Image (cartoon, rainbow, N blue to C red; front, side, top):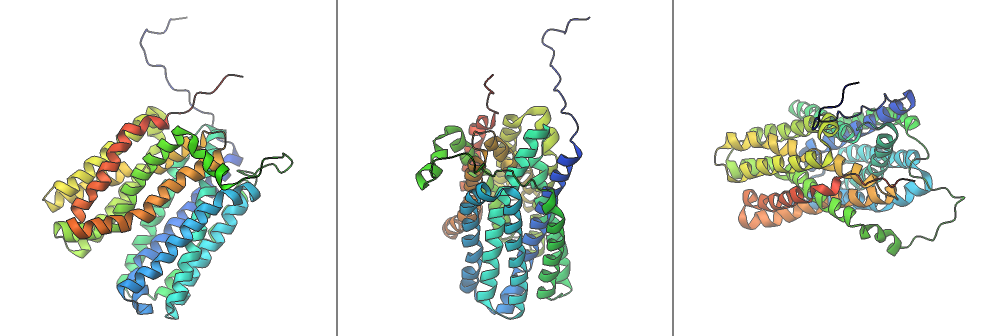
Amino acid sequence: MTEPIHGARTPRTRPAPMSAALRRRKWAIFVFMLIVGISFASWVVRTPAVRDAIDASTAQMGLVLFGLSIGSMTGLLSSATIIRALGARWTVLIGGSSLLLGVFLMGTMAGASSAIGVFLGLLFFGIGMGMAEIAINIEGARIEQLSGHSVMPTLHGCFSLGTVIGATIGIALNAIAFPVILHLVLAGAVGVAALLWAIPGIAADTGREDRSVERPKRTWGSRLSVWRDSRLVLLGVILLALALAEGSASDWLPLLMVDGHGVSATFGSVIFTAFAVAMTIGRFSGGPLLARFGPVVVLRASAVVAGIGIALVVFADNAFVAGAAVLLWGLGAALGFPICLSAAADSEDSTASVAAVATAGYIAFLVGPPLLGFVGEHIGLRLAMLVVLAMVAIAVFLAPAARPREKVAA
């Protein structure tokens, strides 16, 4: 037997192939996230048509859109309790049904010129998305633990792919003046069919507490106690930073390119689509990168790449250089959510940990847009992105928090 060469790198052990049952669970959550992405993008690209249908001013439209924020936070804050009581399958069923009800309401109420109806549609959509996505992420982390395969990057890649598909279809339907009510109702119908297929594949017991085991009553203090874990706090900060990078592009990138770099509105939309494509590529590439380099290296490199992209968009005076830099921005922001949530699941109470860290990310989506809008009102959107750049720089130094916990031998 030959001795190993001193200093040679030990090859990583490849995990065994997934069982058929785990593959079914994996594809169920992939399809669900794809539908969430398609539904969300279908709404976003038809926002101007909905605004015209309900004859809303900019201020009134802001109030209508606030329904999505209220719903999202309600879904997020209630998700852990529902998952513990009912498990992932029922939580996804309830959340997915609420989300798709919201899609139907947005379409039909826009057709009825009802601003209140569209507000309610966004409220139900937000509740369902916040609730179901936490359960889906917990189920994804559980599949990773059981199989040894990376699942979370592709899971979030399915959402990004869904946004690209939904946006592309929506842009085409906008171009032919396809009625918004029919568009959203059809999107909801496709979502219902996909939900009915996916639900049986999601494990019923993931995240559910054993009611035969007596546990102390949960109070708000006990729910917040999860943040006593300094590692989770750091993961929350990292996700806050990279979710801010993702959300700021989703909300402001077209306008930033138009106002900050003088491009046309059409070119601004093309650049946003390029960002979404880069996010999708980054997430689908995440599994092999994580298997080869590990979460800390990939997370740190992601933050550096995102930072370079944002810096070029802010400081480059050439619109084509700034447009190309958006690809780096998207690639760098892509893996924040999947890596941080996988790391959060490596905790004693994975349900509470994933829910807490995910909430930090969604707060960035909800608070970031108005914050950057306020700053941008005074110094311009390009310079406002320096706030995002500073947060991403912090994530570079905090990346070691994603290192897996050392298992204590029995």
